[in-house]
Amino acid sequence: MSRSKWLLPIGVVLLLVSCGEELKKELPVLGPYKVVDEVVDGVFVTDTMFTTIRPFSFTDQDGNEITHATVDGKVYVTDFFFTSCPTICPKMKQQMLRVYDAYEDEPQLVLLSHSIDPIRDSVGRLKEYADKLGITSDRWHMVTGDRDSIYSMAKHYMIAAQVDELAPGGYAHSGAFLLIDRNKQIRGIYDGTSEDEVDALMDDIQWLLNE
Image 1: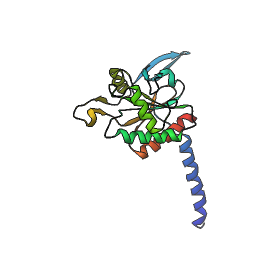
Image 2: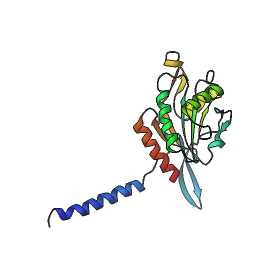
Image 3: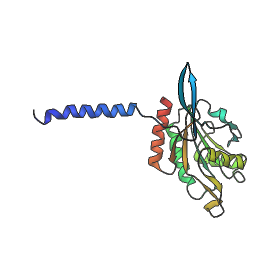
């Protein structure tokens, strides 16, 4: 048999494998978990229970109260920043703006950015910042609140946010974007300053929306 007659079947097999891998894609659930043993209908079952995002309450750039109920049943992306940040925050916000524009007509996606400088980042200042970006609070909430609550929330999301007098701007924080599913579980952590990482984030957002 000539070599050329083998090429088509091999190509078809590779295509089928590729399609199969795409269909089987799964996003891990990240964060603390516990293993629970129980008896269900007389059968001994071991189950893994993952931590869900705890309740919260903050105020966004339009003075709206934003709580865990705001994201009930929705996919959301969250991060931590401050408006006077001279280093990574401008890059992060330009990348988050890409997500905002890409999902302009998707009501099931919410963006949630926490200011780690609530002393300077008042509701009015967050409003000015949001207006410069050209965003609306019904789709992208920039929130402020009690500093301890915000920092505690960052730890809950497994990322850093803290006062640091030696850091540019006086604060040190992670540049991560976190992807949260409809069950309030963390499904991905991405570098919010990287275009490639945010491309991957948007692919994973679409996967969760279709899940």
